[in-house]
Image (cartoon, rainbow over all chains, first blue to last red; front, side, top):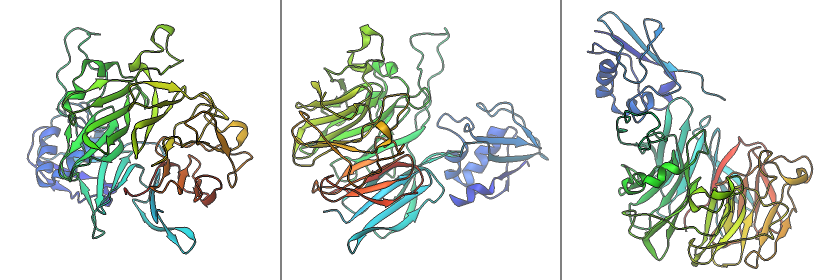
Length: 89
Length: 367
């Protein structure tokens, strides 16, 4: 199963533990993580389900291409990392 | 007189209380996080809206026991698919994702709250903020798509006025989109403002109600038909709940600004913090002053005692000036982090803090 981990910056607001999740796409993997921690969704995705403008999501060290549809595929050995992008001062 | 107020800044929420004869910071929360709106209800609940740079708009509540907890933030429903033709009239120019909670107000009914947001959605809660629903009637009005942006390209609801005599009477100030009124608690809406002028618009649209750039509305609580408006182009006053407006041309030293506070009982008294319009947005001659009228806008006093009168470039945002229920205590905070308090209706001021983070909102608890 893909592994998903979240920036420690989120710990100030809520629990966001790393986990192994079911899913063949980034969107499915995120949905599985949000099933464990529902409040996390609003921190990562906007109201329309796209990655927030200042949130970055990498798979195996590379940024995903589909930030709106979250359709990038992920495999059983892939590592997903969610972290903050540049956002002013 | 108020014993407490809250200050929302770019880097946290500060609570001030009167200690002996002085005002002191007695609590700090969300240090490092932008606070965009505050509401302290009469029942003891305190709400703080956060505008997290990375993780979006959030809403927290401190209950009467003093415990903070995060609430579900207002959220927009799924946006309908784009129409096939580019530039179609059906295409919504505004985002359907919450950008910022700009104002939170008590709804006048137990549990009811209203939240005005950027990009212009009005949200209502019936359970003290635990859950929120977009006001569909306003959001689906075709005219709403004519609202213009203030924060980037997105418009915002900066003022939500609830008639103290009738909680179903709700009036909204929109930047930029005029004054919207509902007499049925939000089931239907009308654009009601007449008499305002927006000089930056093309000549044929300057008096169009929907183009009016309302920076902030304030209402006299004891005379709810009296409204004051700090508009992009000047100061306006209404004696019929915001339907008809007359420009208050006596405002000085300048007519541009963001904030307005209305006296809670005297319908003729209001306060403003003028600045040079509009690309510069700094106090006239580097002197920070408050303009007060006590005759309904016929004349103004320029109040400067205790305020910096040289090289002061403080701007006071639309939610950063407040008056308490006595009409005696006022507080305002600036983009430079200065915070000033008056306890004699503005005659003189004392700097409570000089170096807070940039201040977005100051607020006394609801009476």
